[in-house]
Image 1 (cartoon, helix red, strand yellow):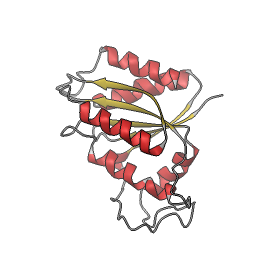
Image 2: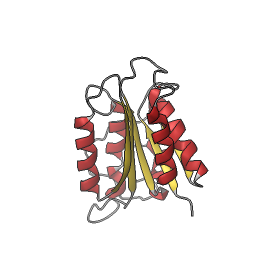
Image 3: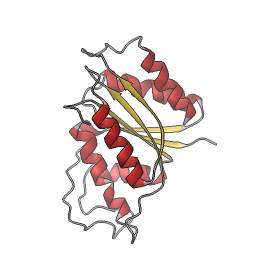
Image 4: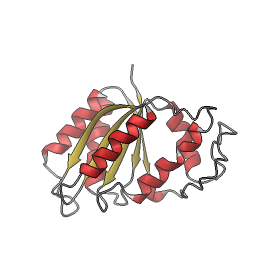
Length: 181
């Protein structure tokens, strides 16, 4: 039985290197019979978390803010797998990805114990360099805190320009990861 996969794309480039990783992952996932929904976060109107602890009162609208997250929440709740996709920005995930992910806390607020829904996760990243260590550490700690299972990572460094990822083995690794989740 296929899984529901949600991809949070934190890249602002529609045809960038991160988008190519997502494309290959999605192809592999669909070949394996999974359903994939991609959210291009840069094109959505998503505001930062207010830290108000006001969410969780209405499961249909978990956050007090009404913005682009309203599209994401139902897909997130139904997802078996959440894929975080981002370029490496200043040795971290992009602000777009961090902002949207922070807002998922409103779903945990729907539980009296602030328990996050059980998910599997994967990480796709592209970068000019190879300094992924801090992101990998953050990703691993994040999954540990959430109680999520890591299904794998594809870290594609050495992509100085848009399109540099073409022909690199990381694209096939992304496709294989999509098949294997």
